[in-house]
Length: 430
Image 1 (cartoon, rainbow, N blue to C red):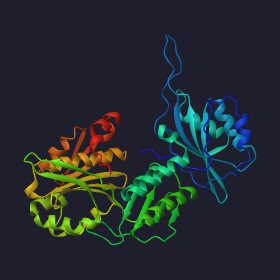
Image 2 (image 1 turned 60 degrees about the horizontal axis):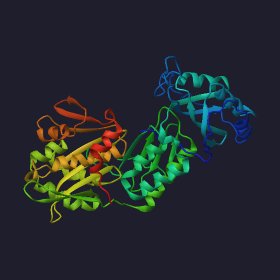
Image 3 (image 1 turned 45 degrees about the horizontal axis):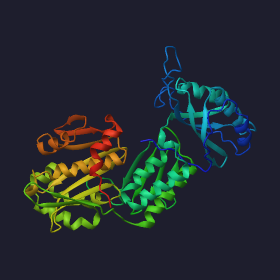
Image 4 (image 1 turned 45 degrees about the vertical axis):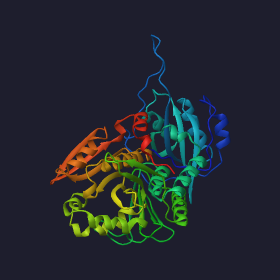
């Protein structure tokens, strides 16, 4: 998932520039420059992808389309420095679509959205920037999502967060780009350590930020390849503050399914308000069913529920009977930069298609969240879970570790249009 940083100075370009005079004159003197003390630029061959297209050739070959790039660089604090950088880019026929400013105490880091000829590789762009005085340059491929102006994008993330508490980690990831986000509860649960409390104002340490989670505990965000700026830190804090003020909230969309034998089952989101009903389902499940789900002492199963049902750590779906009794739970869990899927269906209701229906909707939510893959941890003997994963019709990877089977469904191996058509009908709407 690609997430652009956002700023207050985004200007759409009118088209490819061949001379920088107009832009350079406008930008010169707008901001001070910052000489960063870090050397976090990625290796030259680690930029996501280099432009591989070629220009117009003989025989009627059409020119390759232009490439979009996101670039961040530091320009020395001197008049004309930014103008020299613009001139160097224009000399390579690189169009500046937007410029974003990240002010610091001693200057500013500038981030660009660029459109460049397909034949121009990333190292050629960074070489041009370096020759013009840019330092600590970082570049990666951008996509159409980055063309949305910063205020619109931030408002969209705020709206998603306001509608669903489970959106906060995803919104942070889209706000900050490729990063790892972990939520730790204030109190430890089985298999999950407790958090070291963060101050109310949060902590920014170069490539790591720690924010106080709305319900207690800590949200840790790591981006080793690029330091966070104070501007990004302030935006992340504002998003978490919005989430905290709104409190717990879960969309109430639902589906009603009719099972082959005629029973109606309702599938909807679940949260901590459903803790008592989920514990009652545990009591009705056999030891074998709980063991296959939790991979540990069955007596600890109830201790996981408060964590699993919290929208701060993912999304939960519940399958309910007409009387409201929960007979199945499905979890989509944010695991750092990965996404886990887990299912539990009460013994009496197994082999009726409930697990498959829950799984389809969990994957639909993962597709909607733009996750690259989802994985399930189970036992090789759990034929029901294996069959349900195979029923997704997605490329699967299998790995066995000490008797535990990990099945990974690769969503990014399927074209976006195919994913949308395959799983779009399973997204729950209010």
